[in-house]
Image (cartoon, rainbow, N blue to C red; front, side, top):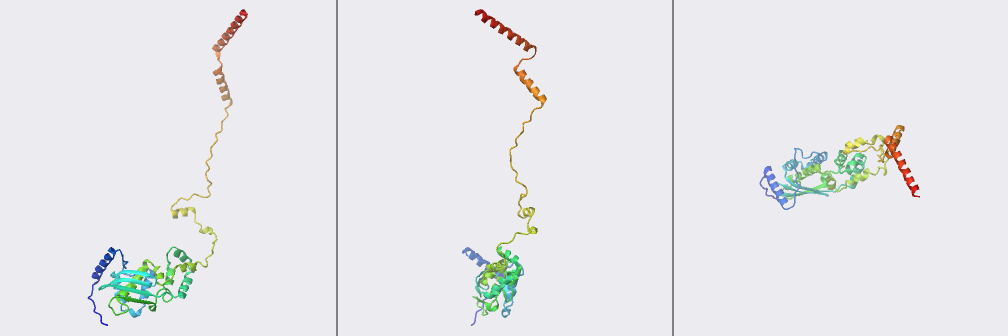
Amino acid sequence: MYYRWRPYVSAPERRRKGEREIAKSRKKGVPLAPVVIRTRAIAATFWGKAWCDNVERYSDYSNRLPRGRTYVRNRSVLDLRITAGKVTALVMGSDLYTVEVKVAAVPRTRWNAVCKECAGAIDSLVELLQGRFSKSVMERVCQPGTGLFPSPKEITFTCTCPDWASMCKHVAAVLYGIGARLDEKPELLFALRKVDEKDLIAEAGKDLPLAGKGPKTGKVLESAELANIFGIEIADATEPPVEKTARKTKRKLPTAPARKKTTAMRKSATTPTGKKGAKARSTGRASNARSRAKSSRKR
């Protein structure tokens, strides 16, 4: 079949056309997810690089791979979405093309073997529970032939461009774009191969006791260490709580001189003293005698 080749479009022109397509899609309320390469390397993480290395194992398509690397670096992959067993993408070339990559599900026996080998790393269980993947786990997952990376016979692809080759430069750009996307979200590899990463947690938890023993003395954090970690003040548990009790004041008894002074003051307040007191007493006795004499005369 004869195809009419379209005129060559330079990389800057492809980028401008791609930016217009992204803006147009955003206005329609359908935002795209472009692949953006910010460094010379397409992938930065171990698993992203391992995916790209696995793509380059497809020796039958070695003549198409360099053009694919150029396309993905020039931001020609305007949209890339990874779902269960399938990758869909939009690539800007002479025109806007649609690429679809299908990946077969990983054999169950292979996946079980991966889970068993990853179960030995207890630290990976903690990271998996937190939604993170340690390097040891990803190294096992990314092993060629026995991991989750597909072999050439497990992957098929199509493109709407007029190129007669089964893997055109647009498909190659998408395959490299998958490696860049795994840099950001490595869990997409499990979705692509139709396996559940929670199986790793289940396998790792089989050998763990249901109720663990108390921590050893050397592994217990002190209050000062906890305060430094969480930025809070922790009271010392050994100090007894302070009880608020009312204090009873004891009344002190006065001394002997003080008692004598007090008695004298009381007497002075009730009885006159000195010459004035004696005169008052004699006057009182005389008035009483006169009163008795008067009463006797009347009788």
